[in-house]
Image 1: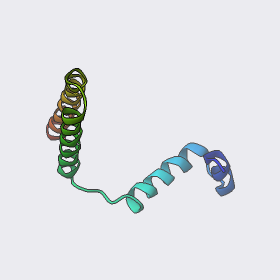
Image 2: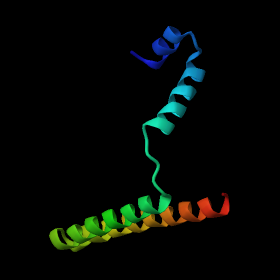
Image 3: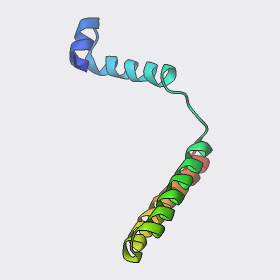
Image 4: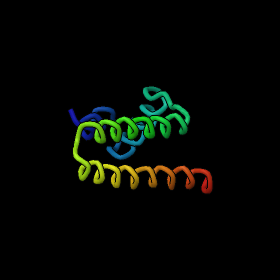
Length: 87
């Protein structure tokens, strides 16, 4: 059953039903952790990936993963700064 059928079943227009459904889902189903927990989790995950890549795979592949990781971490830094500036 898709969103349109659910919306018609409840007598609401699909967009309004979807907005209401997502709003309820976000407040009831998802426990919101502080942002810094996600940031620390990202750093730990990338540290593990880099360590495994460094130990198990060649230097050229490690370099590629390191560049990707650096870009991702710069994105996390930019998002963190944007959260503080535009709060």
